[in-house]
Length: 489
Image (cartoon, rainbow, N blue to C red):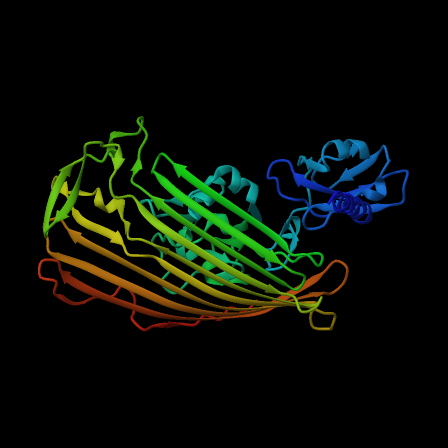
């Protein structure tokens, strides 16, 4: 038995000397591995780089007293091999304040330097989201200080850019426009369908973007790029994951999130899920008395009763819950082709319209009920990218997408039996072809085609809550209407 143990020990030592000592380099704040960190020494011609896991074999540098470790955007470090060994071959780099050549893609659907974009572009980075912990995508935009958010209920958030809102500013997810035929001039809450935990980067372009994105982009563009699965750099799988649990005292929020990525050399998968339960919001003690919730309506057995609120600072009927799911599959058959499929799904519970529930008429609360029905958004997106060298283009992106939107609103006046129900369902189909061609060292040509088809199903019913009888009511939008804009760029 002792001989067997000795043999295993020698094999372990042999394995260590054969495969070398591995150093892992991570970001000091986020604890995420850093790729393409350069290691070199002035006394050696050896140069090494970390892989996608932040790992690098440092055995060729054994015995060296001055090993330079650097990555653009991080403070450079110079350590000896012995120091790395005493640190357990774990190294953390701190981000510095060097201003780098920012790359954005909102303006022309392609990566280009921010200084080459005629409009002002603001980027919300994952580190900012991690620090601020926004509850919704609307809060994420508002906390960045660049976009004004109109929010009249808990499940709300309507972005405004330079006075433009709703159907005058464009929401895009992974390059696919969210705006549909029912995006109107009034405030909309569709941006909350996006999950802040699943967003990799957000770019806000200020000013007209209609040349690239159509009439909805008169005021600006908010482009959300969701998490993308990563390929493995070697034969072993690349596995990454994040988990978060959050509780907030102001509205008794309870949120749980999990995402997991599994990458091979040609295939990569990513799954993300988030569930949030928001309770009634409690306002601050120093707020104006106009916002106190002194009473509210409760309906039981077909009767409306006005209840005195024991805690006027608790804004009764602001809570709701939300579920977000995302699945992505990425495939790279060759160096020049890449395919990616994404599935997104978001749904909410009923969302009370708090600002309407607090309105008074003749000294009494006006509404007994006013709420949005479940807001459902589902998107399937297939994207293909191709790099080549011909006289027509250097790079081609093809995007096919289908989106389903379901919304509804319901209201009933205090003491009245009739509830007005309005339902909307939209199927949105889109096809994108985007081309890029380098004409010379300084000039690039961008051109493409976008085809959009929306089918709107809008209905209304007037329901007698006492008898349960319903009759057809007016729809908010033309029922069965089609909307087919075809912007060219």
